[in-house]
Every structure is written in structure tokens, then in C-alpha cells.
Image 1: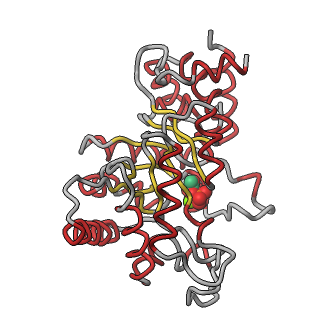
Image 2: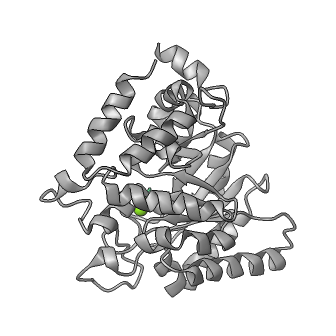
Image 3: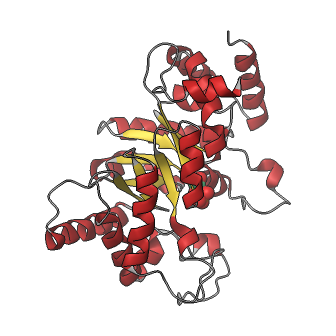
Length: 320
Ligand code: PEP
Ligand code: MG
């Protein structure tokens, strides 16, 4: 059955009622790219670049970054590679970055806030990404966006570098939706973003004001909480006003009970753990997106994550 699943994953992922859903994989290393390919991933919806920056004495230079991004792109053999800009700071400190200890690291200097506070770090990473050939395979994704101005600042920098490096082809710049602010203002952000990808791990943490790593509240940190589903619905509604696609690259994309709900809410790209891609593909083939929409409508009326999970279990049992 596993071999069948991997083989069917080699075909484009389409729902039972014929809607195209992109089945991507999250990557956190070079080896992950091989695992993703072996499992039939159609590309990567999230390359976490932090691994290149942690546990060392100085930031990687342009050549080192470019070599690594290029190798990962080559292993994906032309498939899309969405490279997330450095999402470091707070709980993921790097000794060479002058970030003072913070009382609330999750609310402090992290994600794109670091890149904007330390333009050299951002600049080197953008130059490395822009140098990867074939041009157009790599897309840029901005983490922890809370305001339109952050996205515009990155876009301006990308456009300036394209002029300087004489790069004619357009470069896609998208955002992660990880803050409630980004979900609520998705329509404004979508005006300036090529795509939106929901980071449900952080979005859940910030929506519920519960630390995703704190065992004392772990039982409550569930992305199927009605508040999170509501923010996902706001995101897809906002993005559709500018015809932008919405993906999910957080843990919900690897959660069998969540997937029908995400697709019912209008998500069309799922970036999952590399080993989960065959299961993801097989599940999507069994789903009718029309039914998923009705399922999601019903879920949005419920009052707790437990109720949503119970509904989702019944939905899964009813699949043919
Ligand atoms: C997320 O927050 O859902 C996400 C994908 O980013 P990370 O888990 O790397 O914070
Ligand atoms: Mg995150």
C-alpha cells in the first residue's frame, strides 16, 4: 500500500471532484529534499533556512547560502522551492546576532523583524536566493508578518537588487500568515503579496495566547480551535479579493482531520512533513471539495476544538 501511495503521489494531486491541490513538503535540511522527492512531493512550500544560521560563530556568506539553496533546488529538479527568509531570534538565538535577551521572545525581535533591523542579514540572503538558477524556481516567503509595511520593505529591497543584478524575470514574494494581524488584514497584504501561506503553529499560539512549547498549556494548543479556523477563513476570503492562492505550511497540513477543513476553507496548497506526502495525496484524492466546504461551514459553528475534532472524525469515517 505504501508503494502504491508513493506511486500515486508521483501524479499531480487532484481532489475526487477534480480540484487541483498542490502537495508540497516542508524542508529543514538538504536531506529532506531527497526524502520529499522520494515521497512524490510536487515542490517545497517551506524551506526553513534557520539550520544554516544556527550553531555557528558567524552568519553564512552569500556564496555559502547560494550553494546550499542551489543544491536543494537541483534536488527538487525544477519543482517550486519556497524559501522562507530567516526566522530567527527570541527562542532561536544566534550568538553573532546582537539581540538582547527578551522577556517575551515570542513577541520580540523575531522573523522579518530581525531582517529589517539588520539589513545586512536580509540583503545577503536575498542576494543568495536571487542567484539560484534556474531563475524562477525559488520564491521568497516572509515570516512573522504583522504589517503591510514589512512586506513592502522586503519587496522594495528585492526590486532594488533585481535592478542592480539585472534580473529581468519577476520574483514571487509571499508572506506567512502567522499573526492574527496578518489574517485580519489578509486582503490588504494580498494586494502586495504573490501568495499567502498560513503557519498554523504560530497562528494558533498567537490567536490563543498560548506558548506552543509550554507543556502546561499544550493540551489547549489546537489549530482546530474555532478562533483559528475563523482566522484561516478570513485569510482565504482576503486573499481571494486579489486572486492570490493560500497554502498551509504549519502542522495542520500534516493532520488528517484538519486537511478536509483547510480545503473546505479555500486552501489550495498544503506543505506537509516530507514522509506524510503520500498520505496527503491519497487523502485529497478521496475528498470532494464541495463536501469539504459544507464540512467547514459546519465546523465554523462549533464552540471548541474538541467538538471540531469529533466532527472531523465523523467526516473521515464517512469517506468512501
Ligand atoms: C508555523 O508557525 O506554522 C510555521 C510553519 O513556522 P515554524 O513552525 O517554523 O515557526
Ligand atoms: Mg512559525
